[in-house]
Image 1 (cartoon, helix red, strand yellow):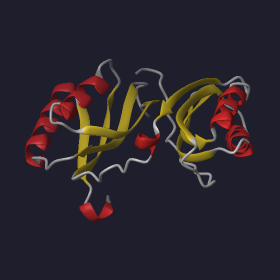
Image 2 (cartoon, rainbow, N blue to C red):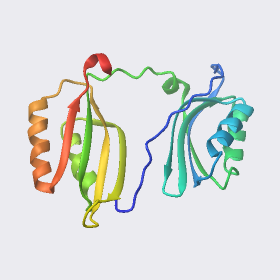
Image 3 (cartoon, rainbow, N blue to C red):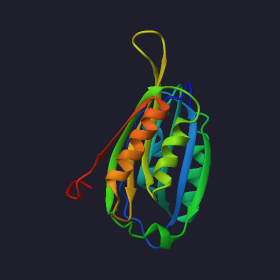
Length: 200
């Protein structure tokens, strides 16, 4: 993960009432960052009868990356994909979503927590932390990572934060003990903070 910088993801929604006849797809695009790129993308989608239903946008170093779930009439969906690849040299990948999945209601998690990690950067940190979660049936809902130089000594620090969720009750005491053990073994600070049900 050395050298990777992820700005915190932003969200954007553009409203146009979608219809049952719309095509749904998830679009991922990356390219050089510049001023006005979000405006250009939003305008392109809107001008081609598209509805951005959900999105994540971020800067990664000198590049820009976005992922969005879009609904649009089939001919316009093809236009959006084709035209977006010409916006500032963007590289575009699309993944079709069935109408059934697009309209599926995502169940609210039974348990949710915020986590954060800070420590000296070395290979395998993301793997080790997410292995801890996976072994207990936890899903990573959001993840943000970055590196920075420590104020003294020039050491490269690794920072990670995000949210984890579960569809069943969690033994938090056991999870906390396991996370403390992993923290000690890796020499990192791994913090876990459950989110109250009312705040989820």
